[in-house]
Amino acid sequence: MGKLGPSWLRDAVFYEIYPSSFYDSNGDGIGDIPGIIAKLDYLTALGVNAVWLNPCFVSPFCDGGYDIADYRQVAPRFGTNDDLFRLFAEAKKRNIKICLDMVPGHTSTEHPWFKASCQPEENPYSNYYIWNNSWLAPTDGLRMISGSTNRNGSFMINYFAMQPALNYGFANPNPEYPWQLPTDHPDVLKVREELKNNMRFWLEKGCDGFRVDMAPSLVKKDPGKKATMALWREVREMFDREYPECALIAEWAYPPQSLKAGFHCDFLLHCGTPGYTTLFRNEPERDLFNVSGLNKNTQYEDDGNDYTVTNRHSFFDAAGLGDAKAFFDIYMRHYELTRNDGYISIPSGDHDMPRISDFRDKKDLACVFAFLMTMPGVPFVYYGDEIGMRNIPNLISKEGGFTRTQARTPMQWDAGNNAGFSAAPAEKLFLPVDRASDAPNVSDQMSRADSLWHEVQKLIDLRKSTPALHADSELILLQADYPLVYLRRNGNDYILTVIQPARRKWECNITLPVAAQSLESLKNCNISAEVCGTLLHLSGDDTQYGIWKVIR
Ligand code: NOJ
Image (cartoon, rainbow, N blue to C red; front, side, top):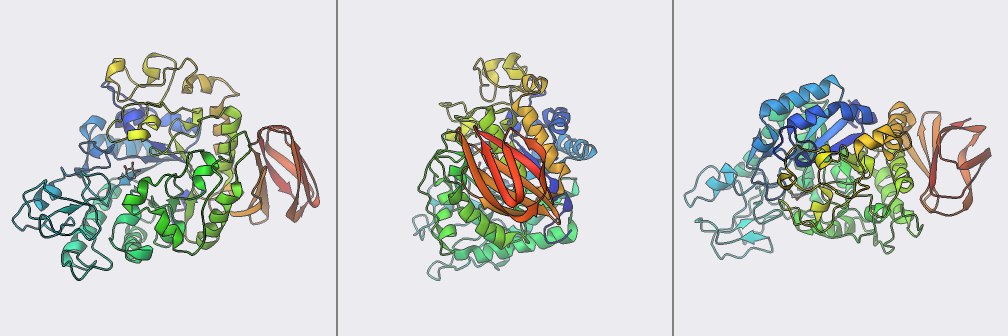
């Protein structure tokens, strides 16, 4: 275990499971933990070796479980703590790591800490949340809720109205408002200990780490996130000391802060990373997280660079109108700054963004996965993306999902009843399954050698078996354009990747940084690649990609 953390991260390919939608083992219409255990062999077949499980704890589910009412108890709809322990054990037998979702910034208003904190009488939980000191007191620009409790004050929220912010203190408390406690206030330090102890609780039971929700949001009024970073460094020290084989993965979307703060990985996000959205999706970058501390405007302005993305076309669209440079300008800067500290994780999608399959066919999606599996860092596959599951638009919001609901529908296992997700009557399902006659499903795609599933499976296998494609091997970008061309390097081994999402005839010359004798095809979808010393000539006539070993 070096600075980069547990060695298993090097060849890890994560799979994100939204537990309500994965597999329903007891016919109540909602996915559950025994259902995940039943599908572990599926994960092995696909080749993924780590899971990020969205929150599965007791919750009123007003924000898909990101409103936790008990950090240490599995929500009854998903099973019991024993089921989760069994998942850890069964996954371990198959060499699959299980990371849970830790939501440190806020709880549900139904959490017993918050209920105690609402009491007018002072008690040990009074300062666990951020309260001002009078029912109509000034809020100092913070998002506060008034009038919903008997306590003479308003409480700050972190996201939705029923997600009160836990109190990790203020980096620069406003002297006019003594209720803004400093980060070393004893009550605030208690909350920090609660966070660490909640992590310890699950790590002791065999969990392999956490994806940390809204990790930069903890300390308030913290420009440059210095105090928040110090807090996470303390947590990392705990991991290094007590759980060196466990992973800390940030939802931060700003690697120069998160990875320096001790996280092993940080995600690029739809709503946090300029350039990431337009790489994969046509939607404008929305400021969903502006409220939450994942504020791209402040984070990205801090380093003095202009990251305005003007081209809204996705690079991976067959139309070929996108701009990979907008992505790589930021990516390469952050990669160089952080490659000795941790990993930048590029997800295929997640439960907060539209699925990647919109407007794409199998060939387009294969290019996306070729990119994900050949880039540095630790890749994440969102459940169902491996078969090209689609967004189901216009669904009524479920459990605080709003437009995100479209990407949270049940996994499509087969062509049978409820797509094989559940034995419940269709009207009892957590969300409807994709009922289109050509809706993709696992069983069909596993039975066809030319399916997207097999393409993804082979790419995952290639990544895991090729050290130069592992998370920590060097990236040498050769061309951020159509086609995208880069090398990965591990010692003297070089792997060349060429990805052409645009559906057109194309050719180009590239200068390699090292002379090559020949190229050995590892996965070549009909691209012609001729090499003569350092000169590489590429041509093709369609959306396609190729991966070669450079023979020197
Ligand atoms: C980010 C999570 O991914 C999202 O689903 C949730 O709504 C917010 N954080 C609030 O916890």
